[in-house]
Length: 292
Length: 235
Image (tube, rainbow over all chains, first blue to last red):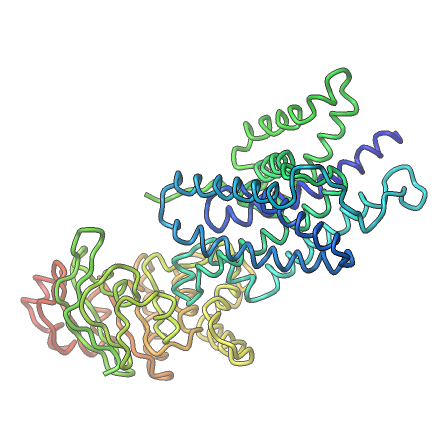
C-alpha cells in the first residue's frame, strides 16, 4: 500500500510535466492544426537559458520569471517569422519547418552550452516533504507549480476578453475576423503561451532528468501521448491525459514484474492505443465533422 | 455617399464571379441586392468585407478599402451577418454577444447594448448561458443580428437573414431590423431570395444576374414591374 501511494505520487509529479507539455502541444494544435514537433526543443532551450542565468548568479525565481517572459516573446517571434508565412502552405512544408526548428534549437544548445550533462538546481530541494517517505519536496513543487499554472490559464481563457477572443479565433477564424479579431496575432499569442508553458515544464523537469540538449526528447513523446489520450482538441483533456500517463507509467514500472521497468513507455502507449480504439478522438476530444 | 462601389470584380481562384459592379449607399439607408441563386449576391457582400480577392474600387466613408484585411474593414464599423450566420457554436449566447463587441473598450456601453439586444430578442436572454450551438435556427439568426449590432456598426451587411426560418419568425426579425434602422441610423445592405420581403424594407433595389447588375430602381417600381417579377424574382 505504501509502495502504491508512493508510486502514484511520483507518477503525479512526472505527470505534471507531461501535462504541461501536452497542454503546450494542444495550444498550438488548436491554433494552426499542426503538432509542434519542436515543442520539447523550445523547452530545453528555455531551460538552458535559465541554467545560464543562474550560473551567472541570478537568484532562482528571478531567472524563472525572466525565462518565462523571454520564452513567451521567443514563441511569438517564431510564429511571426517562421510559421506565419507558411500559413497557407502544405502540411509537408509545415513539417519541414518544425523539424528545421527542432534541429536548429537542438544544435544551438550543444553549440552554446556543449553536450555534457549538467545539474540543474531545484528551488524546493530534494528532501522528503515533512519527513514523509511518500513524496520529496521537488516532486511536490512540480505538482503545485503546474496546478497554479493551469489555474491561471483557466482564468485567462474563461474570464478575460483576450482569452475569449483567442478561443473564438481558434474555433472559427473566419467568423472571428468578421467581429474584428486579429486572428494572426491570436495565433502568435498562442505560440507565446505554449512556449512559456514549455519553459516552466523544462525548468521543473531539468533537476530530475538533468540538463542536456536531448533532455526533452522522451518527455515530449509523453506529452504527445498525453494530448492524444485526452483529446487533441481539449486542453483540459490533455492535462488529465498527461497526469494519467505519468501514473500509469510509474505503476507499470513498479508492479509488472521482469520487464515492467524497461517497457514502461511501451505499456503506457499500449494503454493509449486501447483507449483510442474505443474513442478515436481521445477521451475528451471532439471528432471534427466538416460539411461538404 | 457612405459606401461607393465602382467597377467591382471578384474572383474565386481563377474564376471571375463579379463583373464591373457599381452602386452606392447613403448613411442610414436600406438597399437590397436581388437575384437568382448564383447571381453573385453573397459574393458582393464577401467582396465588401475583403473575404475574397477583388478588383475595382470600394470607398467606405472616404477610405479606399479594397484589398484591406477583413478585420480592419470591420473595425471601421462594417458588420457582416454571413450566410450560415457565423455563430461561435462552442461558447455561450452571451459570450457571442461579447465577441461582437470585442473591438470596443467601453465596458459600460457594452453591458447596456447587451441589455438592449435582450430587449429586442427576449429568447436570447432566456438562453444567455447556453452554448450557442444548441439554439434553434431562428434563435441563431437573432443571435447573428444581435452580435452584429454589438459592434455599433455604421453599415450592416445582411446575407439572407430569412433563410430557413418560419414565416412568423421572419416577420419578427424584419420588424426588428426596421426598428434598429430607424433608432440607430445604421445603413443596411440586404441580400435576399425572398424578394417581396426585402422590397418592403429597402427603398432601392439592384437586380443581379451572373455577376452583373442588370437593373436598378426604387423598391416600389421594381416590385411593381410585372416583367422583372417574372424574370428575376420568381413570384
